[in-house]
Every structure is written in C-alpha cells, then in structure tokens.
Length: 458
Image (tube, rainbow, N blue to C red; front, side, top):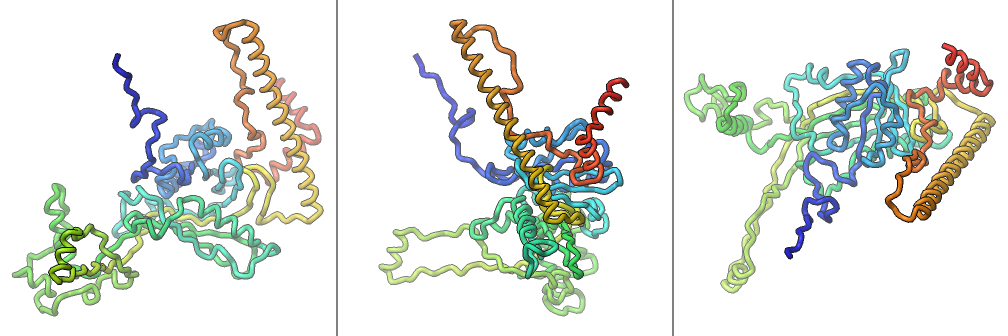
C-alpha cells in the first residue's frame, strides 16, 4: 500500500524558516493598532488622522482595521495577545472638543496621554506642495526614527519634567519600530523618516511637547549634470506606454543635442549641478558605494596568472555621490503630554502636568492601590480555584459514566479566564478627571444605589 503523503512546505505546523518579505512585518517586529475610540463620534477629521497615522506605522500595523461604535477598549486588548500586538494608539475626542491620543504598551502598560493641540492631514500637506509625493514603495519598510532633544541636561528626579519620564518617553517611542543595524541594513530599504522633536521650554514650566513630522527620503545623483539626468529619464519614459510630456526635455528651439548639453545658444560650457542653479546643491550629499555583483577570478585562472608573472588588477570601488532630499508626506501633529499611567489605560498616575500631590496624599493613594491590588489578587485566586473545581467535577463525571462519549457539559465562561481585570479599564480616558472622581465619591457614599433603583423603575 502506498504511503500517504504529508505536506511539509505549506501545511500548518511546517518547520519552514521565516522569510522577511517586503511589506510584511516579521514575528519579532513591533506591531501596533491605531484605533478610534467612539468611531461614530470622533468626526471625519479625526478618522482621517487615524488613517494617516496608520500609513506612518506601516507595515507593522493593522491598516485595514474596522472599528464599530459598540467596540470597547477591552475588545482590542483581548486580541493583542493572539495577534502579537505590542502598541495601542487610541484617538478620541472629549465632550469639550479636544483631540486626545493615548499611546499604550500592551498588555501591561504604561500609557502616555497626549493632547493633540494642532494637526494637519496628509492631504493638507500635499495640497501646499509643488511636487507632492504619492504613496509608493516607501510604505513597504518601516521608517527611520529620529528623535531630538528628548533628554534635558541637568534633569533629575526633582525636576518638573523628571529624568525618568524623559527616559520612559524615549523608550516608548523607540519601541514603535524595529531596530536598524547599520552594518546589515541595506540603504535602499530606508525610504522614510519619522522626526520627533521635543520643544524646549525657556521658562522650565514643566511642559513636554513633541512635534511629529513624517518625510520621504529621495536621492539624486550629483556626479552627472541635470540635462543628462533628464535625457536618461526621458529614455525610460519612451519605453513605457503612459509617458507624460511634461518630463520630456524641450529641444524645439535648439539645432543640435550638443546645444542642450553644453548650455544652450551661448555655449557657456558643460553644465553641472553647481552651475545650473539646481536646488539640490543645498542638500546633504553622501557617498554611496556601488554594491553591484562583480566578476571574481577563479582559483585556476589566478594561479595561471601568478605563474605567468601577471598581477591581478584590483577593481576600484565605484563610489557615487548622491544628494539626499526630504519630501514631507504628513501628517503633522503637535503633541502635549498631560499624564502618564502605570497600567494599560488604568493604574496609578506616575506623572501629571497639572495635578501635583503632597507626600501624605501620595501615601494615601499608595494604600488605596495596595488594597485594590489585594482584592484583585483574591478574585484571581477564587476564579482559579473555581475553574480547578469544575474541571475535577467534570473528570469525576466522566469516570462515573464509564466512557468519554457521554453528554457534553455546558460551556463555562470561567474556563477561559484571564488574569486581566477589565473593570479597571478606562475606555474614555476619564481617569483623574473631575467627573471620574465625582463618580467614585458617589459610589463610596452609596448614592449609586438610589440611582439604580430609579433607572429600574423607568
């Protein structure tokens, strides 16, 4: 009898090496979700801003995520583990019209709360550009992250913006994208740059403001003249079916191609970037070594050349000078840090821009959080004990029935328990606000019982 074939290349569970293809994030790369909390209430501008930020975070983000009005924060947190999501970026709008951004590390936090003071969408940035750059292959690889002025010299734990807060913000932003190894990363894969610049506060008023900019990296060869580059580009366009006439050089007023190459009717000489008035001369220039494959002499040929007394000629490295230029893609944001929480949208307030507490108040809060932690731990132990007890009862019933094909037990939600307490999640970002404190005070005084009764009668 013929042996049954087992699929090893495409079957589930095959031990195939993981290949990093363009446009797809690997399992080790950070993954993010950009979410609108209250999808039907944030408005069209915030929805478009969230879509633009998803483009910035590509390819390691859920670019086709569809939010529903009924989705809560815990619905996304539950899926962070199975999908390998490491960061959550939550856009929301308050009742007063302020746009907020919460950046959280899944699944344990911390969470940084930003207020989006100003923002410009991608379409707004491209509308004012003379030659806007559209979406192409730039989004197949993650951007290069450049951070400026995040560490203040002389900052310590007693500063208005403490040193550990600056280190935390640096770590959170750095973990958004996979690290880059300069020795192994090809230069062609770095096509975008994300610039985060912290504004300096002259008065040391304790503000933490970050400017968010997103650019595309374009390069131009400076070893040849601008007319020669245009002719080369025209040759490429002639081979395509859809060639645009605007990129073709205008030779109608010239008698010979030499007039175009040496500078027109006056014949001022061969034009270069320095003499043609090109805008690239002010940009940064870098030297790029040509890494094209070269012909290597075989061992037999090399030995024959040595016997003949001929020394093999060493090929000089082909170094090309290229000018680097940045073209803004958008969006733009001005982010003001308002507070930092210890957990994922819930937990102790590690830093607040406006609220400052004394040592006695901090000790009182520590006692309250310790009591809450002990109650949570007791609930976890009780839930785990209930799950173990029900499993034991189920096994006992199976042994008593004598076969494993007996009646199936009803599904129990406690079997799929999680140690994450979703009651502590603050979906709307109200923790620390006056309304949230008023609700807590009403719950402590027992006033919520009267309101629940009135709601039941209605």
